[in-house]
Image (cartoon, rainbow, N blue to C red; front, side, top):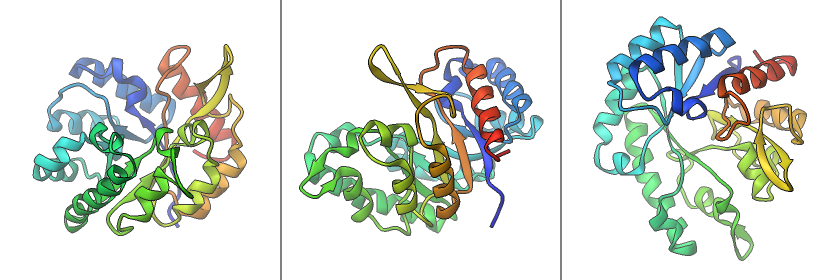
Amino acid sequence: MSQPVLAAQLYTVREHTQTLADFTASMRKIRQIGYTSVQVSGIGPLHPADIKAVLADNNLSVCITHVPYDRLLNDLSAVIDEHRLWNCSNVAVGSLPTSFRNSGETGFRQFAQEASAIGRRLHDAGLTFSYHNHSFEFVRFGSRTALDVIFDESDPRYLQAEIDTFWVQHGGGDPAQWIRKMKGRMPVVHLKDMVVLDGQPAMAEVGEGNMNWPAILAACVEAGVRWYAVEQDVCQADPFLSLALSYANLAAMGLK
């Protein structure tokens, strides 16, 4: 089994990646922290070749991306070309489009079918396709959650998972259990912690909150996760300091 790789989810530093100059400075900082891979998400309208050059200059790979759903429907050939340019074999969609979400269980079932069709085209091009969850997918339809519906009714060959630990916990699920459930079907996991601030759940650096990291990381090993992507949508301080603290805590847990 390949050694796991720590990656920085660039959505964490999205406010610092909107121009080529800022993107370049940010990639330098991320590499200096110790990360060797990134997830491309939330960045500015940069040319794919410029992205490739900056990442190469900093010895950073791209483990996965988040691509808007409309591009997956209408511009898939260009998406495939970009991923080949970046030598990135994994594509993900960051959330369920509102039109599906507003249609109840029928919408989630329809998405599972459409996503499988998109994933088949990506599979034929040598790429994987994953779905990234939030907590709204933990609405229940009888005995199943919406997240169960998505993965039960999609083709596992063509739709994989990018489980987000915080959002599973936020929805009342068990992150370790969900990771194990996606065994062999999840190349990338999203790691973020949870604390309580002013009586409300809030995002925190990995290892700085209340989540069960020994269980989560053991489940990642069992499930065959390759990339451990650190993401923090909302940081209480400088996002680069948050990425550095998560990296240090994960290294102390045995990941580098």
